[in-house]
Amino acid sequence: MKNALTLKPGAMTLTELRAVWTAAGPLSLAAEAYPVIEASAAAVRAIVAKGDAAYGINTGFGLLAKTRIPDDKLEQLQRNLILSHSVGTGELLSDAVCRLILLMKIGSLARGYSGVRPLIIDTLIALYNAGIMPAIPAKGSVGASGDLAPLSHMTLAMLGVGEVRVNGELMQAADALKAANIAPVVLAAKEGLALINGTQVSTALALHGLFMAERLLEAGMVSGALSLDAAKGSDSPFDARVHEVRGQPGQIAAASIYRQLVSNSAIRASHLVGDERVQDPYCLRCQPQVMGACWDIIGNAARTLLIEANAVTDNPLLFKDGELSVVVSGGNFHAEPVAFAADTLALAIAEIGAISERRIALLIDATLSGLPPFLVRDPGVNSGFMIAHVTAAALASENKSLAHPGSVDSIPTSANQEDHVSMATYAARRLDDMAHNTAVIIGIELLAAAQGIDFHRPLKTSPHLEHVHAQLRQKVPFFDADRFFAPDIEAAKGMVMRGELSSSCKGLFTSLHP
Image 1 (cartoon, rainbow, N blue to C red):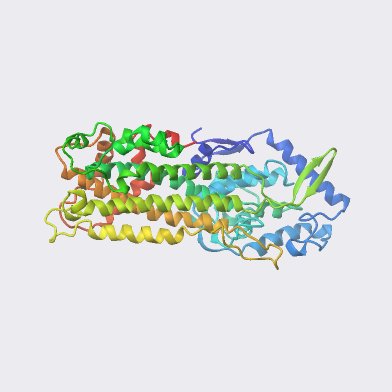
Image 2 (tube, rainbow, N blue to C red):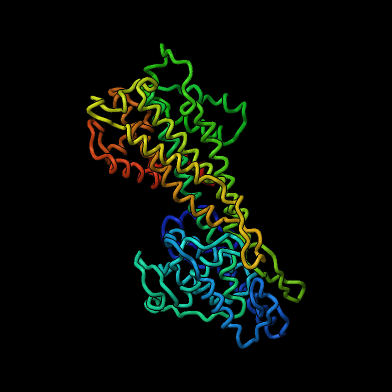
């Protein structure tokens, strides 16, 4: 079945996560997970029957951990936990992010350390398969003690409380569950805490940022190569020997792609001899160094986030100690690894946009590019790309502020019980704004570079880049005179966001996706 996924707890791959981010498909849980889940749930029942105090099972939460809860109020305790912690605000998270949250929460609970019944996991799977996306406000988590508020909103959907989104439309959760023949759950001991503890929201947001960063890196390399030819720059800086003696793996890989992108360009061949320029500006010459460094930190973030996607991050956890089950309190809900990964992704996204903006500035400057001023005929009457570059500059500058690390911030919560927090949820959430900014910058560069290529006709650029140029021209015609420009920019941005630039260069970017 198309896009069907059988989830194996602890063994999800980035390919599977990307597929879930891109589109919905049927989800099931590997059969071998169920005995482990049931054993963990039985351990919780045994602890309750024995009567010993165990945090999160028969006690209050946070600073109220010393408060013992009677057995006849354990279900009320868990429901109250969800209702009181559903305090999020802001825009709702997208369906793509919600799918990742549900998938990772299912995978984490199914590893059998959280003490929830199979019913809980099956209900989450049923929501996913029915396309019932919890209405999760984006703001309200500090990324420690778990993503408590947003995951509480996720759990509300299981209870039939509040709103959900189905096919893009908001509706009451109770009505959506009834229509899908899904029974609302009554939470047993520990289940509410297990559902809302964990880093799944911050991780989902960071994965969303990661997958966009991958597309931006690819698109930025393609548009940068096209700008190189538009400016009649040199491909000598992409010589493999230059990069091998430095040894940085991302730089070596990026240089290889640039060599292939510009290979067999007739424009390049036209100025191999007699070109008076000795060296190109850095935005052309140092592309492998900059984009290669971005490649490396994107890869590092991917490794961290894949580990986190498969992790058990709630608290407390149940472990087997011989024949006995023991409850261990820890701090896996602290999302510092996710915060650091998100902050490094922010650096990459900002730099991809920053160097792209510099190439736009170069292309519109006739003294540097050799092209008509502002890339338009009859400049003066026509302003051409003058203010499009201003938009790119504004967005590049905005990204500089947004790139300030979230992980260096902390604010104590819960009466100083939770006295150091990661701010991972914000650190990851801001990646979406940054990615859209950079996609616009690259889209403007793509338009500018294609305009430059057209001014060199009848000479052609390389086969790869000619294909990219043709794809763009199917959506946006040559800019022969001033016109309403914003729709052109949106069309080019869309190509960047959808990954169309790199898909036009078949096979070149496969090594970017581990």
